[in-house]
Length: 67
Image 1 (spheres, rainbow, N blue to C red):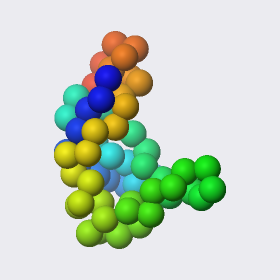
Image 2: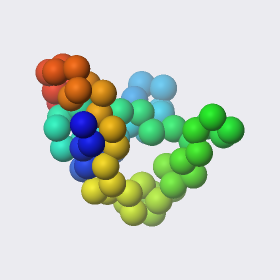
Image 3: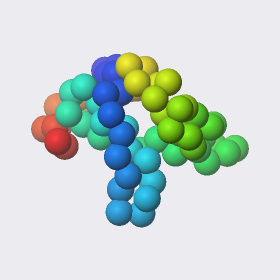
Image 4: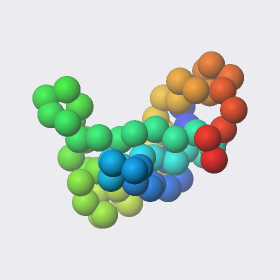
């Protein structure tokens, strides 16, 4: 199920985590060549992706919200 990004925070290892409208969280890393998300490296880039929908596997699995 696709869910929009509503906010971000950093985890204990300082990796960026997207907070989704459903209450689930998902890491959003820029780790080329496997994951290409250069937008996550800047504040402006992250802000530009608010509202962007990510596939939420936790919703598909019926998992309770993280937040």
